[in-house]
Length: 385
Image 1 (cartoon, rainbow, N blue to C red):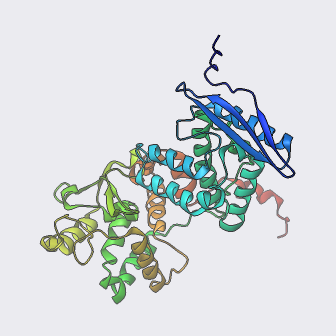
Image 2: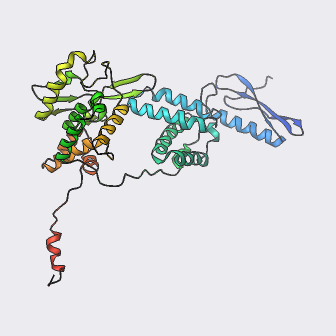
Image 3: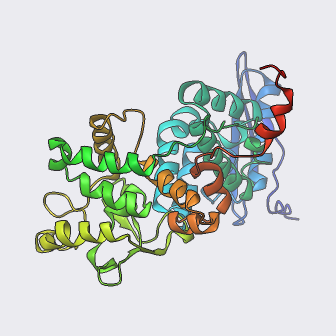
């Protein structure tokens, strides 16, 4: 009578051979395609070799061994497999760029050679603490999210029994201290005047850009993505449709949606901003290249927001404001709206914030409030004072 075949996903009897410090454990394993294949593992002792083979059989049972991912797969391969799907998701190009950077700069170089079954909570914890010590909590928090996604992907394929990153210590990113800094109306007018005398800023086409950002509260990337087709000089409106970002391997592109859904907005411009666009920008529209950009490079192409941000910083230094960045213009717009009695909802709509709380907490400069305390506390004065 013929020997009955092994059941799918089971191993036969283990045979161990060897001597001294070289032992080999072997067995037959019937794979999920019905084919019986030989398995073997080595060890420095007889029991060690047998134990290693049993672990290999255990891990092989968890997943289809013909699949790419199994417990013996290195994390670098798992990461690339996860990335293949994530890169096709509807996440923003900026998010994809940041996640890819964390894979290439931290995760794959540090833990890429670790196999799925070897990544423990302790190993993940040590990796994250090392990243935090070198790069700070903000970058580490992103690296933790990416590694957690990779491990969740492995767990869904049974290459891991669980996601060990979820049990690592939480990473706290402390908010920046200090109240939001904003310029006064007089301060903005002075800034606008100063930068017109800055020959470097004028050569870099910065003064008009500062004017439009101060008139709208747009982000640098949004202003650089502005096209004449989105400007209606007669209706005095400008439509925010996207933002300029840099994609690795593709260069500068206009991301066809702003930072958030609330970023889609049509803004009404003040009269002085219409004058800037009509008299100083629109007359040269024919020289602005095929893209029809309001603020193009010298050759009519997109400008890098990061470079332009540094150029605006240089202009601020020239104007005697070395501690400020371009973001102060957004905070100034929000604060001036608040001081004019407009609501936080209106300010959030102007800036393109999805949450009003973001505008209130981060963009409104704190006002000096007459709470009535001063008058009530007059009673504490000495009578003869």
